[in-house]
Length: 122
Image (spheres, helix red, strand yellow):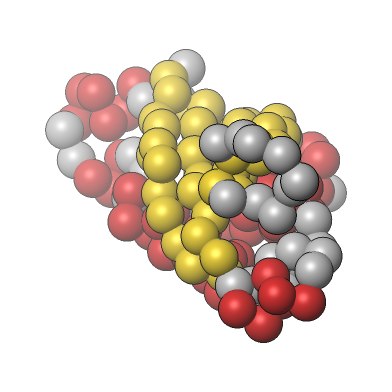
């Protein structure tokens, strides 16, 4: 078993509860940690035996752009579902961060983390 991580991918989307978030949008940061066998890729040194990183990036980008969610929890779930259903990944961890979230107080970011496997979407 192995792990492939794509860290701090950055996107612009229209997710949130407030009207300004829905209409003006904002920046979102995403980490994806995928668990899968890397034995074949380690032995063959062939892209066809592993995950195409650009394809994962495009899957996340599509999730950010195609829907509008109130909660980043729902956005993280959408990302997990699309990756698990479209790529040979056994399980994964998805983190979605929302820098500059409209919270009355001083903070760097809001972050949600979920773990899922293929059985969660059967």
